[in-house]
Length: 262
Image (cartoon, rainbow, N blue to C red; front, side, top):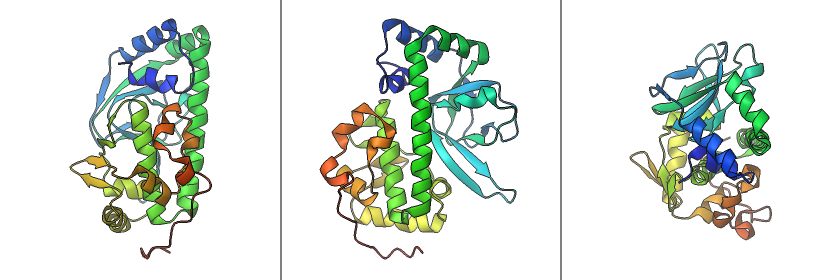
């Protein structure tokens, strides 16, 4: 099996044997372990490396001085956290561990050598940045316009497909380490509202969530509820779980459901 970084890049470009060997060497570098719920790097710190997630889930977030937090993205195996770290004097956000993490730190010199020696990898890095910006735009739309039920359904769809793209799903099941507070911080809802919405998704038989594991019995139905169109992820493998006739731009509007949101 290719490592997660190679699988991620092969979503975007065709890699040669030499490119795969370079990515395999990066993935085999000594990994640093970060305990769950600890920060990998904090806002205001001086960044020294690009972080490659090898195992576990992380999140990128901003925090107000009273402790309120907004998660702006999740990072899973195969993700490179913030390729722009080398041009930042100080971090403008924090990266925290959701679960126990194993990360490889790629230093400036190593990173520049990779970019200089492999046009395909450089192209894949550009693609990753494009997808990252696309995800951020989708998350802004999620918080700004989608209702609670749509927001959380959309998050489930997105993260499942991101996990699938690096081989971390089994059928329509995957690990799901996010707490209700994590989901709340990512969707701009309260934990109480998240709890009610998860119960509603269960009652609709769209998700089965227990013991940190997610099962999606009806992917097409979940996509409809979340108004989910996978195009913004630019993952070639997504087509096999995306019913464009039902979950694309011409889907029928989801009936209003009384959930208590404004």
